[in-house]
Length: 229
Image (cartoon, rainbow, N blue to C red; front, side):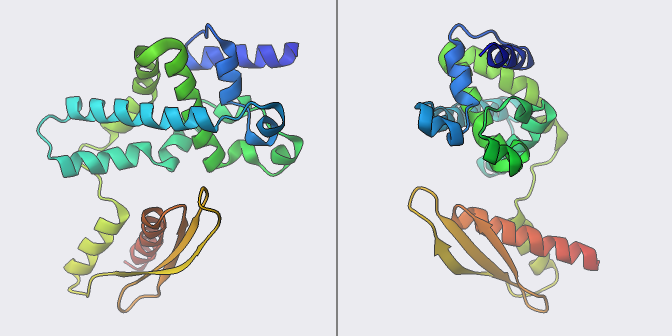
Protein backbone atom coordinates (compact mmCIF):
# COMPACT_ATOMS: atom_id res chain seq x y z
CA UNK A 1 0.00 0.00 0.00
CA UNK A 2 2.85 2.36 0.84
CA UNK A 3 4.34 1.79 -2.59
CA UNK A 4 1.07 2.79 -4.28
CA UNK A 5 0.79 5.98 -2.22
CA UNK A 6 4.34 6.95 -3.18
CA UNK A 7 3.56 6.11 -6.79
CA UNK A 8 0.58 8.47 -6.85
CA UNK A 9 2.48 11.20 -5.01
CA UNK A 10 5.07 11.05 -7.77
CA UNK A 11 2.29 11.42 -10.33
CA UNK A 12 0.93 14.44 -8.47
CA UNK A 13 4.37 16.01 -8.84
CA UNK A 14 4.25 15.21 -12.55
CA UNK A 15 0.82 16.80 -12.91
CA UNK A 16 1.85 19.83 -10.88
CA UNK A 17 -1.06 19.55 -8.48
CA UNK A 18 -1.61 18.11 -4.98
CA UNK A 19 -4.99 16.43 -4.67
CA UNK A 20 -7.24 17.08 -1.70
CA UNK A 21 -8.92 13.78 -2.51
CA UNK A 22 -6.15 11.45 -3.77
CA UNK A 23 -8.73 8.71 -4.32
CA UNK A 24 -9.88 10.56 -7.44
CA UNK A 25 -6.42 10.33 -8.95
CA UNK A 26 -6.08 6.68 -7.97
CA UNK A 27 -9.35 5.89 -9.73
CA UNK A 28 -8.21 7.80 -12.81
CA UNK A 29 -5.09 5.67 -13.25
CA UNK A 30 -6.65 2.34 -12.23
CA UNK A 31 -7.19 0.38 -15.42
CA UNK A 32 -10.45 -1.52 -15.90
CA UNK A 33 -8.54 -4.81 -15.57
CA UNK A 34 -8.26 -3.97 -11.86
CA UNK A 35 -11.15 -1.55 -11.49
CA UNK A 36 -13.94 -3.96 -12.35
CA UNK A 37 -13.10 -6.13 -9.37
CA UNK A 38 -12.43 -3.31 -6.92
CA UNK A 39 -15.25 -1.04 -8.00
CA UNK A 40 -12.86 1.71 -9.15
CA UNK A 41 -13.58 2.12 -12.86
CA UNK A 42 -11.95 5.06 -14.63
CA UNK A 43 -14.44 5.30 -17.49
CA UNK A 44 -16.70 7.80 -15.68
CA UNK A 45 -13.77 10.14 -15.07
CA UNK A 46 -12.69 9.64 -18.68
CA UNK A 47 -16.16 10.69 -19.86
CA UNK A 48 -15.89 13.90 -17.82
CA UNK A 49 -12.28 14.58 -18.77
CA UNK A 50 -13.08 14.30 -22.47
CA UNK A 51 -15.65 17.10 -22.11
CA UNK A 52 -13.38 19.25 -19.97
CA UNK A 53 -10.52 18.91 -22.44
CA UNK A 54 -12.82 19.75 -25.35
CA UNK A 55 -14.19 22.87 -23.65
CA UNK A 56 -10.78 24.20 -22.65
CA UNK A 57 -9.16 23.52 -26.02
CA UNK A 58 -12.09 25.09 -27.89
CA UNK A 59 -11.92 28.19 -25.68
CA UNK A 60 -8.16 28.45 -26.09
CA UNK A 61 -8.36 28.16 -29.89
CA UNK A 62 -10.97 30.90 -30.13
CA UNK A 63 -8.73 33.17 -28.04
CA UNK A 64 -5.56 32.30 -29.93
CA UNK A 65 -6.98 32.57 -33.47
CA UNK A 66 -9.65 35.30 -33.32
CA UNK A 67 -9.65 35.87 -37.08
CA UNK A 68 -10.07 32.27 -38.20
CA UNK A 69 -13.33 30.83 -39.46
CA UNK A 70 -15.20 28.12 -37.60
CA UNK A 71 -14.11 25.46 -40.09
CA UNK A 72 -10.42 26.24 -39.57
CA UNK A 73 -10.84 26.24 -35.79
CA UNK A 74 -12.68 22.92 -36.02
CA UNK A 75 -9.79 21.28 -37.90
CA UNK A 76 -7.32 22.51 -35.31
CA UNK A 77 -9.60 21.23 -32.56
CA UNK A 78 -9.88 17.73 -34.03
CA UNK A 79 -6.10 17.42 -34.26
CA UNK A 80 -5.64 18.49 -30.64
CA UNK A 81 -8.22 16.26 -28.95
CA UNK A 82 -7.83 13.10 -31.00
CA UNK A 83 -6.44 9.92 -29.48
CA UNK A 84 -3.00 10.32 -31.02
CA UNK A 85 -2.55 13.80 -29.52
CA UNK A 86 -3.57 12.60 -26.07
CA UNK A 87 -1.29 9.59 -26.30
CA UNK A 88 1.58 11.82 -27.39
CA UNK A 89 1.09 14.10 -24.40
CA UNK A 90 0.86 11.07 -22.10
CA UNK A 91 4.11 9.64 -23.44
CA UNK A 92 5.84 13.00 -23.08
CA UNK A 93 5.16 13.01 -19.32
CA UNK A 94 5.70 9.22 -19.01
CA UNK A 95 2.13 8.85 -17.84
CA UNK A 96 2.04 5.12 -18.55
CA UNK A 97 4.57 4.51 -15.80
CA UNK A 98 1.96 5.51 -13.21
CA UNK A 99 -0.92 3.32 -14.36
CA UNK A 100 -2.28 0.67 -12.00
CA UNK A 101 -2.93 -2.35 -14.21
CA UNK A 102 -3.22 -6.10 -13.96
CA UNK A 103 -0.26 -8.40 -14.62
CA UNK A 104 -1.95 -9.59 -17.80
CA UNK A 105 -2.34 -6.06 -19.18
CA UNK A 106 1.23 -5.28 -18.13
CA UNK A 107 2.49 -8.23 -20.15
CA UNK A 108 0.43 -7.18 -23.19
CA UNK A 109 2.08 -3.75 -23.31
CA UNK A 110 -0.83 -1.73 -21.93
CA UNK A 111 1.45 0.99 -20.58
CA UNK A 112 2.37 1.92 -24.16
CA UNK A 113 -1.08 1.54 -25.70
CA UNK A 114 -2.33 4.74 -27.34
CA UNK A 115 -5.92 3.83 -26.45
CA UNK A 116 -5.22 3.19 -22.77
CA UNK A 117 -2.92 6.20 -22.43
CA UNK A 118 -5.43 8.56 -24.03
CA UNK A 119 -8.35 7.21 -22.00
CA UNK A 120 -6.57 7.35 -18.65
CA UNK A 121 -5.13 10.81 -19.34
CA UNK A 122 -8.66 12.04 -19.98
CA UNK A 123 -9.66 10.40 -16.69
CA UNK A 124 -6.85 12.29 -14.94
CA UNK A 125 -8.12 15.55 -16.47
CA UNK A 126 -11.55 14.71 -15.12
CA UNK A 127 -10.03 14.11 -11.69
CA UNK A 128 -8.16 17.42 -11.82
CA UNK A 129 -11.41 19.20 -12.65
CA UNK A 130 -13.38 17.55 -9.84
CA UNK A 131 -10.70 18.16 -7.24
CA UNK A 132 -9.39 21.56 -8.25
CA UNK A 133 -11.96 23.08 -10.57
CA UNK A 134 -11.74 24.45 -14.08
CA UNK A 135 -8.67 26.61 -13.37
CA UNK A 136 -6.62 23.62 -12.22
CA UNK A 137 -7.63 21.59 -15.26
CA UNK A 138 -6.94 24.57 -17.55
CA UNK A 139 -3.46 25.11 -16.12
CA UNK A 140 -2.54 21.48 -16.79
CA UNK A 141 -3.98 21.48 -20.31
CA UNK A 142 -2.49 24.84 -21.29
CA UNK A 143 0.97 23.75 -20.16
CA UNK A 144 1.01 20.55 -22.22
CA UNK A 145 -1.15 21.51 -25.21
CA UNK A 146 0.16 25.02 -25.91
CA UNK A 147 3.22 23.70 -27.79
CA UNK A 148 0.88 21.69 -30.01
CA UNK A 149 -1.35 24.72 -30.57
CA UNK A 150 1.63 26.87 -31.56
CA UNK A 151 3.19 24.19 -33.75
CA UNK A 152 0.90 24.69 -36.75
CA UNK A 153 0.74 28.27 -37.92
CA UNK A 154 -1.84 27.30 -40.53
CA UNK A 155 -4.97 25.22 -39.83
CA UNK A 156 -4.15 21.56 -40.46
CA UNK A 157 -6.02 19.60 -43.10
CA UNK A 158 -7.65 16.41 -41.88
CA UNK A 159 -6.72 13.33 -43.89
CA UNK A 160 -10.01 13.12 -45.80
CA UNK A 161 -9.80 16.76 -46.86
CA UNK A 162 -6.14 16.44 -47.84
CA UNK A 163 -6.88 13.33 -49.91
CA UNK A 164 -9.79 15.05 -51.63
CA UNK A 165 -7.65 18.08 -52.49
CA UNK A 166 -4.90 15.79 -53.84
CA UNK A 167 -7.44 14.02 -56.06
CA UNK A 168 -8.81 17.35 -57.32
CA UNK A 169 -5.30 18.57 -58.09
CA UNK A 170 -4.69 15.42 -60.20
CA UNK A 171 -8.14 15.78 -61.80
CA UNK A 172 -9.19 12.39 -60.44
CA UNK A 173 -12.65 11.42 -59.32
CA UNK A 174 -13.21 12.14 -55.64
CA UNK A 175 -12.28 9.33 -53.22
CA UNK A 176 -15.06 6.91 -52.32
CA UNK A 177 -15.50 5.25 -48.92
CA UNK A 178 -17.18 1.88 -48.37
CA UNK A 179 -18.08 0.21 -45.06
CA UNK A 180 -16.53 -3.27 -45.14
CA UNK A 181 -17.70 -4.38 -41.72
CA UNK A 182 -19.26 -3.12 -38.50
CA UNK A 183 -18.68 -5.35 -35.48
CA UNK A 184 -18.56 -5.18 -31.70
CA UNK A 185 -21.07 -4.23 -29.02
CA UNK A 186 -22.94 -0.93 -29.09
CA UNK A 187 -20.69 0.62 -26.44
CA UNK A 188 -17.50 -0.40 -28.26
CA UNK A 189 -18.10 -0.71 -32.03
CA UNK A 190 -15.41 -1.32 -34.63
CA UNK A 191 -15.78 -0.09 -38.19
CA UNK A 192 -13.66 -1.22 -41.11
CA UNK A 193 -13.86 1.17 -44.05
CA UNK A 194 -12.07 1.03 -47.39
CA UNK A 195 -11.21 4.09 -49.46
CA UNK A 196 -11.01 3.90 -53.25
CA UNK A 197 -9.11 6.30 -55.52
CA UNK A 198 -8.69 5.70 -59.22
CA UNK A 199 -5.27 4.42 -60.37
CA UNK A 200 -4.33 3.45 -56.79
CA UNK A 201 -4.73 0.47 -54.52
CA UNK A 202 -7.52 0.91 -51.95
CA UNK A 203 -6.64 1.09 -48.26
CA UNK A 204 -8.60 0.02 -45.20
CA UNK A 205 -9.02 1.93 -41.96
CA UNK A 206 -10.30 0.70 -38.60
CA UNK A 207 -11.89 2.81 -35.88
CA UNK A 208 -14.61 3.10 -33.24
CA UNK A 209 -16.69 5.28 -35.58
CA UNK A 210 -17.14 5.72 -39.31
CA UNK A 211 -15.34 9.05 -39.15
CA UNK A 212 -12.30 7.61 -37.39
CA UNK A 213 -12.11 4.63 -39.75
CA UNK A 214 -12.43 6.89 -42.80
CA UNK A 215 -9.70 9.16 -41.49
CA UNK A 216 -7.37 6.22 -40.93
CA UNK A 217 -8.03 4.85 -44.41
CA UNK A 218 -7.36 8.29 -45.91
CA UNK A 219 -4.15 8.64 -43.88
CA UNK A 220 -2.86 5.29 -45.11
CA UNK A 221 -3.66 6.10 -48.74
CA UNK A 222 -2.03 9.52 -48.38
CA UNK A 223 1.11 7.81 -47.06
CA UNK A 224 1.15 5.63 -50.18
CA UNK A 225 0.77 8.68 -52.41
CA UNK A 226 3.65 10.49 -50.72
CA UNK A 227 5.90 7.46 -51.10
CA UNK A 228 5.12 7.42 -54.80
CA UNK A 229 5.98 11.07 -55.34
